[in-house]
Amino acid sequence: MKKLIFLIALFFTIISEAQQNKEVTITLDSISKNIYMLTGQGGNIGVFKNEKGLFIIDDQFARLSKRILTKLKSISNQPVTMVINTHFHGDHTGGNKNFTEQGATIFAQKNVRSRMVSKQKEKGDVIYETLPVITFDEGLQLYFKNENIKAYHVHNAHTDGDAIIYFANGNVLHMGDTFFNGRYPYIDLKSGGDINGYIKASEKALLLINDDTKVIPGHGKLASKSDLENFLKMLKEITNAIQKEIDAGKSKNDIIKNTSLTAFYDSKGFGDGFINPERMRQTIYTSLTQKKN
Image (cartoon, rainbow, N blue to C red; front, side, top):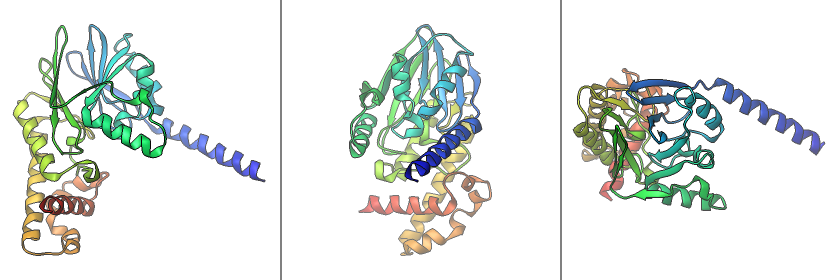
């Protein structure tokens, strides 16, 4: 009987995994000369085709690596030689081991490696093939024949190890999860995220770009400067509204349940994604009150 139960469970696990893979559509769109945006499941991937191979930003989930590599073959037979992680979450770093085994070198802000090591130790052993082997503190400059790439650490935004990556010649900015286009963001408060730092990340990004810049968000469709400006406006208005409620002595429950605080942006569909309006209000409240403490 135990063997039968095991076989049934295994069958459904295989069917579930096959169904998940079947449902994921991998797309690769050209957005600037030799720069592409790959979408699938998880964080959007930035791709740069260069004289040394392919440079990618983030790599989604491990189970999608083969399909991602197949899609990349449509633009180049060269291998992926470099991967930079915008932060440590699994939907952006899950494929690290697979790409390392293909010969890629992993880069990230130093806190990304620390977070990954800590999380892996909690579950058991550290898997070194998944970890960044080159880390940076505040910034990193990479030079290619026809492109200069600059990575900037933005402090305590989505996490404590976020990096935004700018292609100077192609005029493309990849923001990782410091930007969710058209939706409320997930701010990982337990991993160093903070609403005020999140706002500052958008402000910094806007200083780097112009009206012609293509902006790759961590999640959502390819964006423009105006999309990022609207996102920042949303963050500031809701944060200010919640701060006023805190200053007025309103309770946590009253603020979280006050739908008027996010109503305007709820009507614009910002709460239709992973983070709903109530969770957004709770996250901002918690972030603001933790900062005071």
